[in-house]
Image (cartoon, rainbow, N blue to C red; front, side):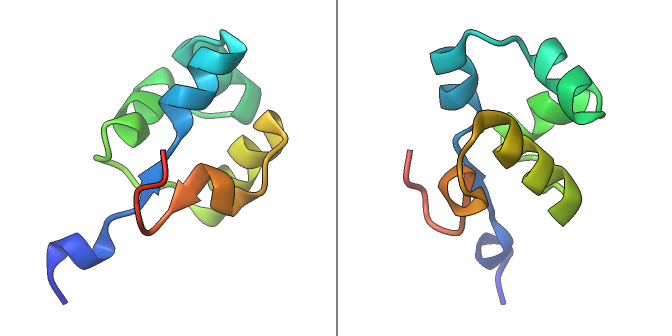
Amino acid sequence: MSMKDHTVFNCLRNLREETKITQDKLAKAVGTSRQTICAMEKGEYIPSLRLALLISEHFGHPVEDVFQLKRKC
C-alpha cells in the first residue's frame, strides 16, 4: 500500500468557516489542541476514532460526512 492509500480527508475547515468557529474554540470544545486541529485541516494528522467522533458530534454531522477516504469537500 502506498502512503496515498492511508490518506484521510476531512471537511473541518469548511465546517469551521460555516459555523464561524476558530481552531482554538473547536479544539477546546473537543479536548485537543489548536495545533492538532490545524494539522488535521492540513491533512498532516489523522485523528483517533474518539476525536473524530467528538468533532463530528460537535458539528452535528455523521463522522463519514466530516472524514472521508475520498475528498468530498
